[in-house]
Amino acid sequence: MSPVNSSVRLWRRRDLIKALGATAIAAPIILRGTTTKAATSKVIKIGHVTPQTGALAPFAEADPFILDQIRNAVSKGINNSGSTYQLEIISKDSQSKTNRASEVAADLILKEKVDLIVASGTPETTNPVADQAEANEVPCITSITPWQPYFFGRHGTPDKGFTWTYHFFWGLEDVIASFFALWGSVDTNKVVGALFPNDGDGNAWGDAQTRLSA
Image (cartoon, rainbow, N blue to C red; front, side, top):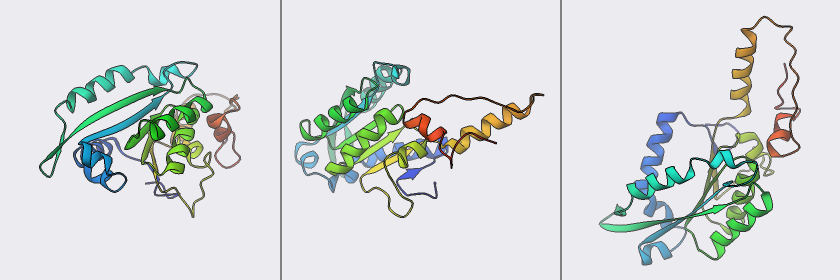
């Protein structure tokens, strides 16, 4: 678990699988405190936002397959305390744009009345979606963004986290360590040049505290 904030968690794969399994089984309990709609309608609505088109589309290439697998797995509903809840997943395309991600997240929350929203695929999608969820007090889980651009990109501070939004993924320290280990095994002058875009990820990579530097 990251020392920065309880809303940013670093998971080992086996722990993540266990946690997701427990979340799926206990979803009605988790959502009961946030809305009475799911309890009365027996339907849990989950909003899903990823960059399905645009420059970041490769991050969402597997979405159709994964969503089909999830829908098949829960086709008979989720049972909790003798009640069966149907699961409805509403997927939206952020088009690889922050404004679009924020817009579709707002639609899912305010118009579709989702009980939970999930998002992935770089800060350009995860951050605006999480900001909308935090502002509207809707549970949100995000991934596929290093925790630094997610947490600090949303102006998080170590002494004050987020109430409604949660994130799991590795941090820049992990990938930097991997790069250094690879480069260290090669006989070179140990000088590496790098160019980063002026966006959420690129600014985190170039940050004075987290940058890729020896």
